[in-house]
Length: 186
Image: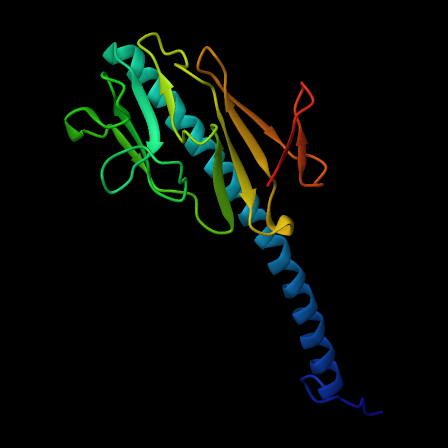
């Protein structure tokens, strides 16, 4: 008795089905990967700004001087345009310009798919005194995704003692409700 042997390899329908399944699985993996990348980028931005504000607070206390954080214009003056690089500098005379033109730290602005804007009543700057406390009027920053499906809106505030506090839009409705009833939107 002779056993029939099949030729090795795949038939055309088997190959087409395999390729179709691989295409579907890889497209799902890419979508999931994009979500992971955007969440990681969001967290990196928050950590970067937290570090920047902690540095400014430390600089005020260690240099025993007023320290300002703000975006600078071409004339080296604070402006409320958080699409510009953010500067940390000693501002002993409180003129919102770096003393001797010296910037202690420069942070590149947030880029797509996020935007940053300040809630500083048009001032556009934050200050810390020689004890590391917030100086003058308080303010906050809001990190907004350019597309609601790509990220989470986050509210970042500095309290009176100079600590950085973060609150995010947990339910994804585009509104952050603060403890005292105020609502923040992008």
